[in-house]
Each structure stands twice: as structure tokens, then as C-alpha cells.
Image (cartoon, rainbow, N blue to C red; front, top):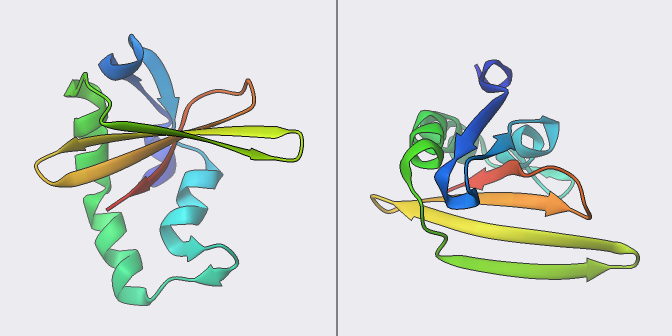
Length: 102
């Protein structure tokens, strides 16, 4: 199901596409190198359809953060609706991609 989504145009980023790639999927099931608890994995995967809906309709970013790791610059944005938070990430000048949901 996850990889069928591919990309979603997001009004919060002027209809720029948010891609659903392996980085987002890995973060749903892992935190760093450790697997998340099974119940947490299931909860996040069940919220995934809401992430798509939120990205397609919400046009306001509630927070943003930039982290520098050596030569990498990583930007994070948070979008929220109905108490569900979606995190979008961009590494250097790459494309926006889904990173997490809670």
C-alpha cells in the first residue's frame, strides 16, 4: 500500500509533490536502527491514509526546523489536521518526501 502512493501534490508547498519513498517507510517501522514496537508500527501504518488526505488538503505548515549534519542540510516541516501530525523532510536540494506520522 505505501509504495502505491508514490507522490501527492501538497497545497502547503504550492502544490509541489511530496514523495513517498523508502526513507518514510523505514521511519514508520524503525526509529534509527531499532525496530519500533509492533503496536506502534501498526498504529502508524493505519494512519497512513490520513497522511495522504492531510497532504492533499491542508495548506498551512505549523512548524519547520533545519538541522545541519556535516555537509548535509535537513529540513523538516510539520502539517497537522484533526490531531494527526505529518512530518515532511527534504535533504539538501532533494525532493520533499513523507517522513513520519503520529
